[in-house]
Image 1 (cartoon, rainbow, N blue to C red):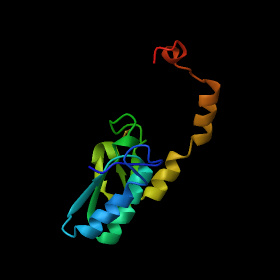
Image 2 (cartoon, rainbow, N blue to C red):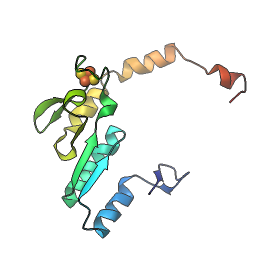
Image 3 (spheres, rainbow, N blue to C red):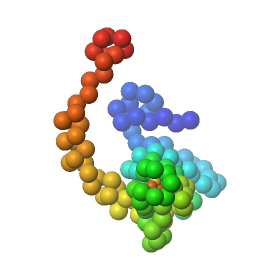
Image 4 (cartoon, helix red, strand yellow):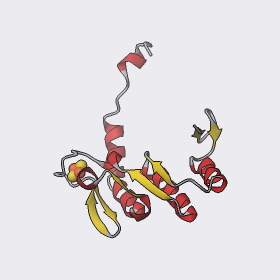
Length: 132
Ligand code: FES
C-alpha cells in the first residue's frame, strides 16, 4: 500500500499519481488500475494511465444523489454518450469519462453552497463542550 498526503503528514508527501507513475514505469505487466475517490484524483489517474496505455476503471458513485435514476444528478458523458452513474455504472472506463464537463457541473452551485455554510454555520456541540 502506498499512502500519499498533500502535506506529507502521513505517508509520502505528494499526489497519488506520483507513486502510480513510478509503479507503471517499473511494472510493465500492470493490466488494470481502479481509481475511487474525488473527481480530480480520478481524472489525474486517468490522465496518467492513459499515457501508459493501461486500462482504468473509475467508480463514480460519489456523484450519485438519489441512486435511483430519478434525479439526474449523476449524469455523466462517457464515450460521448449520456450515462447515469446509478443506472449505467457506477464503474466506467476512465479514459472515456468527460471529467472536465463533470467537474464543471459539480462547481455549478459552489457560490450557493458557500453562502449556505456561512449562513448556517454549525459548531459541533461536543467539540464546544470539550468532549472531543
Ligand atoms: S443518482 Fe439520481 S439519477 Fe442517478
